[in-house]
Length: 221
Image (cartoon, rainbow, N blue to C red; front, top):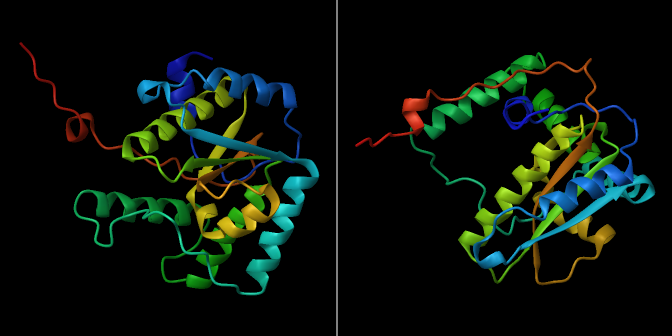
């Protein structure tokens, strides 16, 4: 698979089979992803990879918490501005329509939307999950570095025939994740990432992208 195919075939998959992901594949992907760029080579990412019983335990604890109706943990960072301006507001709205529309869930059916969102806590059935942390003392450029690292991981997974789903939702269950992983106090959980082989029976909508002239300006001589 070439780079262009990896980029264009990568998407947030929300349905995985239970086929195990070989450890040597994960090690190969993460060893290569270590070459992701970062300012002054700080390499600010801290990744934890769960499979087998530890992942099953996390899913169990998260499921029990969901069933009990426990409130979400307060996030340690802001995911979106309180008032998204145009064109970001419209893009987010369009995503919601496409995503829930593919699941046959209407915008007004709050209960069905919540049920669909609750699949986050089962990692959409994935047999492997990565949890990415960053030191709370680092700044915005280092958060950008973490984003480049995660993108590199996801593209390398595609090269291995695997899919992924990055999930900031896990930051709202960060205390449950910490019960299983016991990360140092100086780390903030940025996101989780479900990893595995796609369940092709699960419906999905391939979300679109803005035209090039909306996001890129060529300044030519």
